[in-house]
Length: 505
Image (cartoon, rainbow, N blue to C red; front, side, top):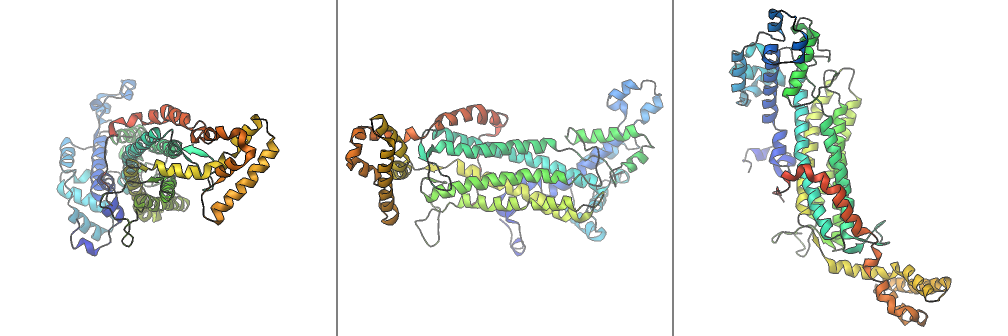
């Protein structure tokens, strides 16, 4: 609970009201600045590294080097004591001092260099050696993006798992399908859920690809030429490449970008945020469908025993969870414009008009996606289906849908197709007038039963109007889809399947 002083400030609802602790921490100042310190430690370790301490293929290829050359390989004058000092202060950040330093220096990275150096006096001369601000800034962003995807993917997998269970349970339950929000034919509740699942499965693949495509920026220098590091290593290109490779491995990446400007390419942000915007589109479609079905009283999201749907109308059960998802998904989709604009206006090696925008848009994309998935998991774990309402709606529409089956039955009984078609057309128009103009029930079936023309097939009407004969291969499609595509996709995420969410309403 925020204190009274905090109530005097604007707080982003994404953090104060919605997002999970793990995603909030992923983009927190604490994690950012701890990561900066870790990156400075990695840099010192790599710059100190000597081939004798870490075997490489190059050692074996260069056995003719003198012992002195081997000793000097990569090894800048950095001591174990300096590294140990840095490691011992990796997480005890004096945020007040850093804020004061930034106020004076107007530079966030140098403020934290000074703050780190203050508690590491022995290591102070070598902290940030050869690096630019983007060494810590961009590499930390890439780590946060990677870790953000790793937080989102298990949550998305859990939503898919819950929806798959729902689809399996209702694979055979006939329901009205809708095109243009008009009911042309039946489907099943499970088949409708599979359409949602297919969208989310594409999102899993998109998020995994975006995460796996991320590379480390590494050490590239002011304009991406690595000039400062080439100078540090007295023109030894191999050492600069080895430094970049070592830092990439230390940070947990498989590759580094081979070319950058001052920053990593801003299209990387487009790639990441586009996958999240696409996820937002999927969730908004799913939750809009749920809201439409809630209006029909066929399917509802979970509703707590003491939950209030409306302050004025006690009987209402508003689909507020689905509405929240739609509301936040709209924001997630809208954020996509930011990285597109930012990438398009960068001048040559870089301009600083990316920074303020990215501080907002990147975290907000992940925080928004995070709460959307947590809310959707809550919805999919408690979806309520009302088969009797669905059945009533089917009875209301099915006589119209069954007319082709009735015509075929009459023809098989010796009747004329065109004559039967005209008979049913007239009766259908009369029944439609009762529904639309008088507000009555669909009485087409009663009209057919009263007409002597249809006497030869009256005994078949129940079978001709059995909803299960109108759902085609929907049940088989559901079972095949779940078995061959959905369940295998979830296999890597099995260890995280039982996690529950605490939803703040």
